[in-house]
Length: 121
Image 1 (cartoon, rainbow, N blue to C red):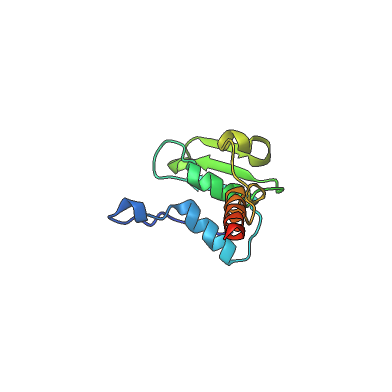
Image 2 (spheres, rainbow, N blue to C red):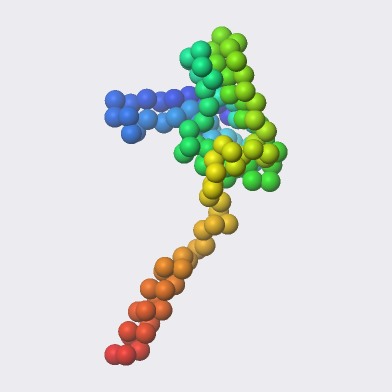
């Protein structure tokens, strides 16, 4: 189990969210696949994961059955999502490492262009 908490700074852009901190802690402990993510907030409303963290978490859920449990403080309402069944609802068109090649098509095209130019000289 890896815990995380928000670390807020005066400059909001530098703030670390709890999900990112927990994920970094999990990776530091050697975790490579997630079983569950539990989000608990300080409000009476259900707390869930932002889009950026959904993308981060998606990279650790591929091929693993996992759960997202979102709840509110004080034993408020709880929502449970089985991520391997509805992850596309949580983050449609998510990116995976399989979408990214070491050398993009743009780089390959540029190399081809510069090779052609070098041949002309």
